Structures are given as structure tokens and as C-alpha cells.
Image 1 (cartoon, rainbow, N blue to C red):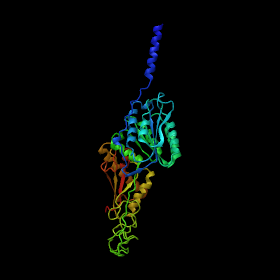
Image 2 (tube, rainbow, N blue to C red):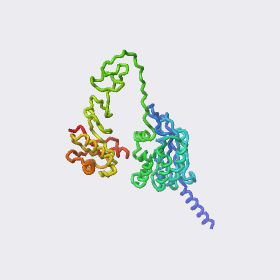
Image 3 (cartoon, helix red, strand yellow):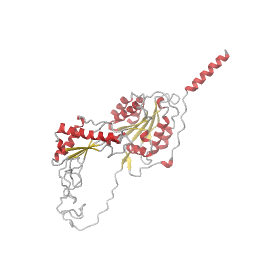
Image 4 (cartoon, rainbow, N blue to C red):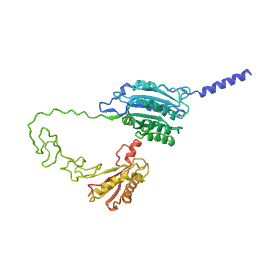
Length: 421
């Protein structure tokens, strides 16, 4: 009997030991040599930020990768700009915490070392994924902070159906002061989780979704940090004191030289009160050189002030050439541009991102151009004979194709409505 009791006791201890979570490896120390600064070229885009790191059971195999992403974000934030920062975890093992979510750092004046120490507090992963609880807590963290805030979610996106409603609640609470960014972890074959992360980012309206794969190198991580944390600083213009000059009008434009900011204006050109040529249609080309006065607002022009290219903001879906009625306001801009210059023929150029085979993308770009042409004919009565459609496939990108946001910019149609006689 004693042998049987000993065997049962041994088995129970072994089972308990096998259920105990494995402690995560220690976090690597910060690298002071890789610290970056803004160099005076940037200002803080937001006043506050908080990172939510998923440490639930579904993240067990990819937690270290997620933790590394957060560490790299911390390492890459310029050290000479001021923010209020916070770090929150969710769904950890009961060995870590019995709370559904814990604030590991902040909200406080951001400090790299303090944030790093907070990240290192996560020793065990496991448990459910209470994203709604974490989002609600983050909303309370940011509610009392003034100014703009960025919320960064790092997760695999699984088992968090309660997330969108909670995200909408905090967006409604903070309004335009909140942008949501998501980083999907381990999504080689996990479309459902990736879709959830995209949905959460879309609720923020001013953020975007990306993945660990898109942030795998230093350049892409720097681009992410710039997009979330940095805005361009206004250039410092030092105006020298003008030297005293006689009251002359060297270029004969009616403005004396001591007030003339545009000397040597061509004879006969109309100028403003400081002697600079007028640009009546505000297209960037002075009236005396403008061969197409009265260009509509928003139309790109060439050096002679004549319309050249209008990019339509049509959010083509991946592998789609559908132009629905919701884009009629964009199509109307093209129709107006075309009708303002009845003597010109028009090129309608379709473009794609780099996803998929080049030959297929070529055909898709032609279909997108044709869809816009058909909409101009059907909805705005533009004559078919005036329009020529062309497809350029993936050959003329306007963005890098590395992120979903960049790829959406490349899925476009350009209308060359002027200067194509």
C-alpha cells in the first residue's frame, strides 16, 4: 500500500510540474550605442502613447518575437523628444498575475530605461485573451492625458471577438485625439487573427495595421516609428536685415526695390504689393507664364500652368477593379477636369501594387482604367472618343509596397486631363 501511495504522489507532482509554465528568457539589455535622436528635423506627433502586449496562451510560441518588436520600438523612439508613455500586458499566466491586464509602466513621462524595465516584468505567458478589458483600461489610462494619443496593439489577433466593441468605445471617448495601430504577430497562415487586427486599426480611423514580417528589418521599423511618433519640424528661416537702398524700382513693376521681394520681374507682369508675380488660379505658376488661367483647384499642372495629372482617391481592394457609386465624388473631379479643357484628349492610366504576377497585374491595371472610363461615360456623359485607357501594372509605384498602407496607395487610377493634345 505504501508503494502505491508513493507512486500516486510521484505522479501527482509530475503532473503539476508539467502544467507549470516555463519562465521566459530575460530581456536583453538596452543598447545605448543604438539610441537615436530627431536631429532637430522632427517634433513629437503625439503627446501620449501606450503599448498593449498580448501574453495569452495563443502567444506562447511567438511571445518572444512580440516582445522583441516592442523592445525595438522602445529602442527606436528618439531620445530627445518628450512623450507620456505606458505599457500594458493582457492575458498572462496566473503565475504572472491574476488580473486580466496589468499596467507594467506609466502612464508617466516616457523614459527608455523605465519602459524597458516594465517590459522585462513579463515572466510567464498563458491564459485567455481579454482584449476588451485591456482596451477599456488603456482608455482610462489615456482619458486623463491631454493632447494626441497613439495606442499600439501587439498580438496574434486570436480569441478577441470582444475587442472591436471596446475599441469603438474608447474611440468614441477620445475622438480625434486617438489613433490605433496594430502589429499582427505570427500570421503566415492565420487570416482570421490578421483580419481582427486590421479591424481594430480601422476603428481608430487615423492609424494603420502592419505585421511582424513587415517590421523585420531596421529600415521598416524606422518607417513605422516615424509614422506613429514623429512629425516634421517647421523649418527655421532666418531673415537677414535688409540693407538700406535708395527708393528705386529697378524692374519697373511699381514696387520700389526696398520692398520688392521678387526683383527682375519680367516687364508687364502683374505683381502683388511686395513685387512678386500674381498667381490668380493658385496653381503654382505665375500669371505671366500661365498658358491655362483659371485651372480648377486640386488639378496638377505643368510648367506652363496647364493640367497634367489628377490622381483619383479610389480605394481599390486587393485584386479588384470595381468602382462603386461611393466614389462618384472622385470621378466627378475627373469629369470636371476633362470638361474644363474640351480641346484635349485624355489618358486614363490604371496601376496596381506588386502583389501577384506581373502579367496578371498588367491586366488588372487595364481593367481599373476601363472601369473609371465606363463610370465617366455612364454617370457623367463624357464621350468615349475623348478617353484613352492604359495600364501600367506594378511598374509605376508611388509608395514602397512594403506595407498594406503603401500598397493601397499604389492601387490607383491617374487621369491626364490636360496638356495631351
